[in-house]
Length: 254
Image (cartoon, rainbow, N blue to C red; front, side, top):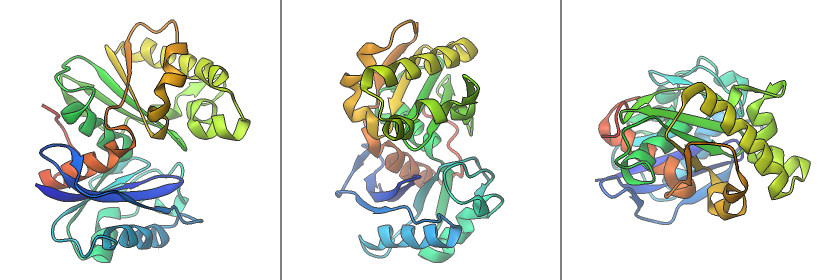
């Protein structure tokens, strides 16, 4: 089943049609920069541009959002304009696109894709997907079922939001070399492991393409740590899967 997926990030908005049965993009994704300021109206227009790059949507559209999403309404907005808080995002985007829209947390979408088609497939213990980018997103699965909107990137790490210290943006803004950044990621993973005792960490986001540069440097974490197999397409795939299921939040990957 081909459904369109869009991934809204703090720096870019990308999308593509997706074969949800196989978990693959059926065309090369199209990306635009996230507008500044990233207000609901400006972001909705960018989402429209991404979708209509491929023509008018012929069916449902899945959209990820970098924050808590409950029943299609955005409750937090860490890396976009604060005017998103309390907005009926699914309704706003459906009106702009002229198609049914499902909105869910970006890391939850990526986690759903990885649990179904990627590194978490067949794993039934506690699995935590972490997406490193402008911030740090999280998706927690236990027994294959999602605990939505966990937002573990906002755990305190050395007196700061974890994502302020260990995100890819922090690495770039501070000019950190891979081994310095790996130490921060290591401390963050150790803290999350202490709280949840997962059997597997899946590391996603754009940096997953460069996993060989930092994952071998991480020590002292008992859980298995692997890069996302779908890399930075996981959010697009998961968004499309959620739209195909007709659910605002995916609850199971098995």
